[in-house]
Image (cartoon, rainbow, N blue to C red; front, side, top):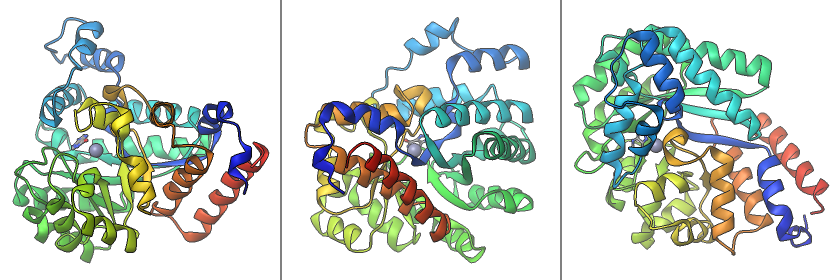
Length: 347
Ligand code: HPA
Ligand SMILES: [Zn+2]
């Protein structure tokens, strides 16, 4: 492929139209303020904000915790199965507009079961939206259950137990919420149990936490992907290992800027991670809170980083397929679609 034949002004259209997988998306983070207000009214949930505008104005985060406080407040309007369905269906429609062909979606059951919402309503609401997306939008998807790391390992075990009747609806587990002070090894036993059950395992690490958390996610939890992982560059030996073992990083550029991990996109280390040979992917994390869905992440990052061009666009999309939890034959079919789009653009 001749990537240099593609002029830079063609890049935004190419970023939008290229097929891609999204592998780091918290479904509760796709809840737009308008839907939060609509569900609050329908379910009789009181919100500490007077209007959609007042809620949006509160989206000025200083770190991960300042975001999580508002994110959990927003999720409190989700009560019935149809609420979970509507939220997830809205995400799939946005994803289809961004030419996402496959999504691996995180959900946080403890945020809901702690309020008395049954596990069944959470999982079936998401599952039915995923089925409709497959039929009507031709988007494939998988669900990944996340344990909240600020809670105990015993609570994670109880959550796993409660989810096992719906085992066929999710393919893996992850670890999210407040990273600092909650290292991956706090969850070693429950992740070992999940691996025994044949679940895929991933974990957020090295977003705000130190590179040591990336190491223990790999060694103690034996994760297949690292979510974020951007702080790995503070430890060159770790970067070499991630490249050698081709451990994917699901990077979320707009999230990193909103949560002050980097001052702006021009200072984001994604190009350095790509240069080091890592299997980096671009994702939206919590698009309703961080200023855009997956294409917005690509577009703003490429606009801010002159070193990123058509070659890197292709590589990032190819990485998103490689890093997904689907059969090799499916990955190969997506790669052909991707190559066809680049060839049609002149590469
Ligand atoms: O970016 C995140 N980090 C940790 N926990 C989260 N829960 C939703 N988004 C995030
Ligand atoms: Zn995340």
